[in-house]
Length: 207
Length: 401
Image 1 (cartoon, rainbow over the protein chains, first blue to last red):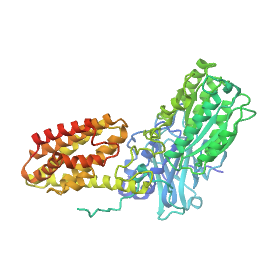
Image 2 (tube, each protein chain N blue to C red):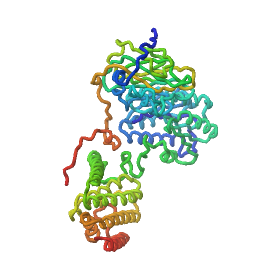
Image 3 (cartoon, rainbow over the protein chains, first blue to last red):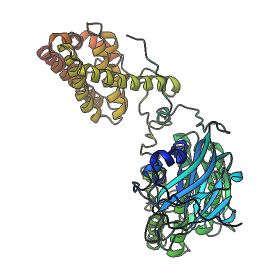
Image 4 (tube, one colour):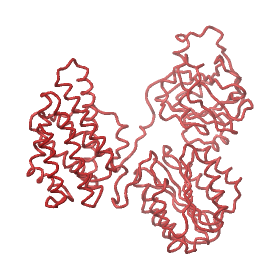
């Protein structure tokens, strides 16, 4: 499968108003279900999904892979159906930036063993992109009707660990999920889960 | 919400009798206890069992929420061969990978009761792979042969697999009861920190300490108990928001009195809450007490005050079975709420009605005796209690309105 190179360098002055709305898929990401394997700090994957105008600011905390292991697997679920058009990744400096990206769609059972065996829906050879000017187009036919995307980074430019500052997703969003809501079935009410339910604004009439 | 695979050591070393009655039996008891605790903590937790020794490690039970199947499989275990740790861990990882509910976290609990054949480097490599795939591992080391070598390897293993303190190593010394040692270890902690509930309390859900908090036994009617608790929390949140709003109003003395009462109620709440183990329960209920004081300005504070008043005493009584300790806590709680009400009554008259009502109520020894008589575990004719009441009454007379 040929790898797709970067195209469309942003050589125009990228005002937030112009490019921002196109790169707005981060708003439709189901943030609480974003997960990453082999990240050094649990939960840091969420910090790389930000609005376009914040792409150059370093995230807190950084999305780093564990030392001595540059691989990363990031699972990004969406709130609805997405037509993914392009991906922009800004990596760290000194060789910590990712050098290759493999994308899988609509799978929720991936780990490093599975990802090693499967062939990705699309893969790209990345270049150093610290200013966020390069975007990587997707083959639209394959990225229609995407509910979740898994981004696998197998290697970087030579450092011991991989660092990612920003992941931008460009595309169109349509409402509606195909599957049922993830429900926790309880035989007994558990106090910890009640707080996760939306309160209905029930007020007591007892004076 | 967690999927756990328990790796049981059924090698020949476990015939040893250094844990009563044999290592193997002690281990089986511990596994049963662990499985019960996990399935209790969250109805969607699943537990699986695999044996490490024999020709190859075998999965006896794939992760299931059904405790009965796990207990049954532990009955049929046989002792044979040598434990193959690395293979067992990899099979456990595979079993977890194919769990039905992908939202569950993955955990392996390893029982190691024999000398480990693998070397440290192999173990660390396996640990790194587990960490990379987000699997937590708890290790229970028991048995005396090769203890130092085992401990060193297992420490290194735990270091390598640990990510944010989700993995633990517990070494159980010979001669102790394995299940008891495990019970007090961090392995029995739910993710989030709360314990699995006291053994004396038996099968109670995580976090709910005593029954009868709202006059409803959580075991008999969990939905009602939970609904009451949640409405209490919501009411508390609403009241604190309302109190904040009234503070902002360019209000008269009445609003500042309400705020002062709320603050005074909160102070004894915090102090009383520290005494008992289930701080949240007491704090909630004492605040409910304070709130109902606010809500009923004139003397009609008796009825709602009566309900919360036995309620803070009830968890206090349930916490400690000894009558003396219950009396002490009861006395302290009553004194503190008295002190709080006494402070508030120093505020201007608008707020004075309610604290006055409470002080009068507590000063009325007959009424108080009848209230206390309705509490479980409290005997009103007990001389210690009478003495406490007498001292309270003299305090009330002094500090009341």
